[in-house]
Image 1 (cartoon, rainbow over the protein chains, first blue to last red):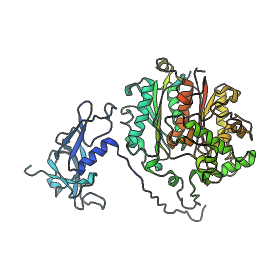
Image 2 (cartoon, one colour):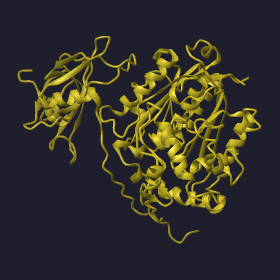
Image 3 (cartoon, rainbow over the protein chains, first blue to last red):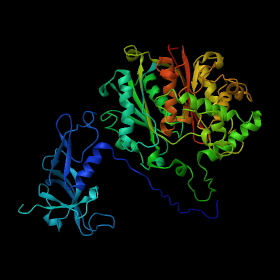
Image 4 (cartoon, one colour):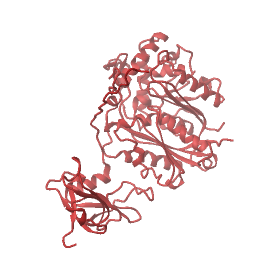
Length: 149
Length: 385
């Protein structure tokens, strides 16, 4: 038997690089211009967020792009009562699947609804963009309940 | 009775330092599409996909296969990931061939890749692990003493490595997919290039590349309908051993010799030098050509360097080695082993273009990985055994 069982911290850090390619570069440069873009599959489905390849057919998605939203419908959601430091918002919010108007798939993002009681599946929300956009998913700060809905 | 199986399609990317124009998925998709086209296949013709790449830490994506399913047309199909460090491209092709040989699948797509520009393999190979002394020297620092060991054992002339590098770099000029091309390369340029890890010079070293390679492997029924000459897989072998273990022969590892012996036996080859027409072997640092020539039984122990010296391994020699320019000219690590297997297949298919060995009927594809501890190899031929 060992007198003592040893362990030590092992911190591993490195800067990596990511290349987005044509399809996702177009989506994120669109966000920088405050536009949410969807790409059509060859079968005509509008994917938002876009995908380089259509999971259903295995084909590359088309070069046919459409602007969607900024409004959409909450398809499902989970309330986050105690946000952590790296969450998008510093106060309670919902993670939600949001199907934007004109899209056939749902996007995961935050809904800044104030309270859990104001959340419901099927509610309408709209995108709130950041003052300074950089070409990243955080260019949409959050979705907020659509006025009058 | 195992199924006969053959490579019916080969695809690769134009290997280069940085493919920032494509995502990782886009990179391997290019190779996959070229292999499918070469095989006359559609995505729907493929029964299963086997992918391989070197350590996840090289790009910092854990289990990249999770996000590659749609790029490889394998939604709703079996997908397998293989991992054996630098030899993984070869091992991945072997696993794919076994899925066909076993009769489980009729046509399998196998893809291997690395996008080295998204990270730094030197760093990934040099991490400091608690309680252990870090070497912090990357692959070259690990392999340089092994080469010194070989030089001492064989009493080989000091310039053997330079000659290997010159040959491979000249061969690369004939390969449209090769990464490094030095049009006016000569002996003095290699000899005078900076010493990186003594005795390995800069021009005796492989580059860091972005690239991918793909194969379509088919059973006899589908190979018969392939548009081009199939490369029949006559034999495969794979062996492993520890990285660090006192007494292990790191210069000529037991696992390498055992894998070669098994391979030749399975392929019914008694004299590899006579019965193999050309080889693509894993030579990331020039001196590994004579080292593997001996380990693979093409030369007596201590005399592998003479093959290089006498020109036997040149494109017009009696046993051409690394006709494509080899790992020295293109090194997308995860794909590098599969590229060796693919180039061997293309030689016997008559599809090697300007670096074709005339009349090549039987070829060796070889890869090694880790600390000279994983060995994967296959024999492909114009005819099945």
